[in-house]
Image 1: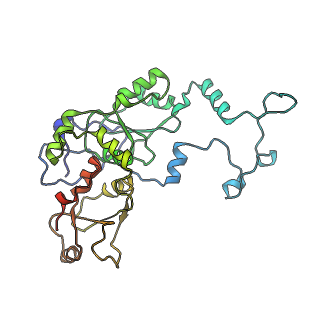
Image 2: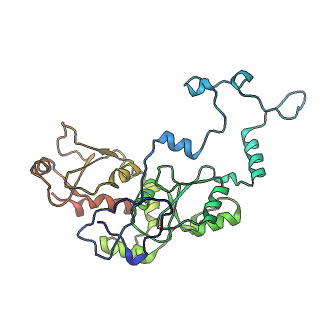
Image 3: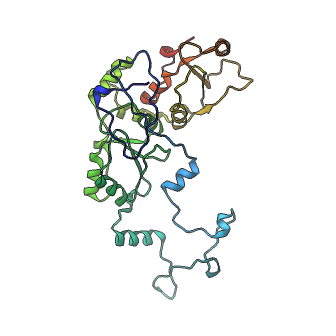
Length: 318
């Protein structure tokens, strides 16, 4: 079972989250490390967009069927919203004005309407959930591609943390929600980004990384260079048994997950990343690995999800 950094904080409650089996352990991790892998659900881009930013105008029956949008009419169950007459011309109230009025009446802060929060290692309080709702934002117990903010109180190598970094989501401490509640809107999160020097330094030592490793620096690297696995396909050999988190990491990093290698795979394409455990599981896998010019330890992908660097030389098996 994979282990994270228990000396840097115990696994906090995840509310209604059902925990996945932990990531596979690697030989270069100490017995004091542990991970609290989170449930991950991958949704399509269309679904993510619809859930996070619902359309402001109701659609007619024809539009839902794929036809062109047409103005609402009494026959279709719609009606025009008319404002005060100005200069003899009736004006329509904009959807923004309607939303602002409804928000004012309900006491809802509409500035966070496209924000989606989730948390790892933190048990969300009723007050925090109320703040998110009041902001007009949403909270999900599971990871989704549309998540914009991950709430964490310490650095843990969980599935949610890895996916958040890969997708460029903001990783903030719980105090961020307190600041938003006080301001009545989403505030600048720069001073609330997760900084955990103790656990980040411990992770850097275990992985033999530079001393200046930090989550904030990794997120900046990701935002500068884009998705780490853009244009890359990933295939895991049969020796990789604990792989439940890997397809979600690949998707969050912009890559493509392969359930099987193409029959025409020549064995030396850099656009295909072959991952395996150090020991082949079968003769068939051994033959497969012999045909490939490069095979890498599966741990490389999990490290890369946190660091946004593929250290191929250090993790190459052959």
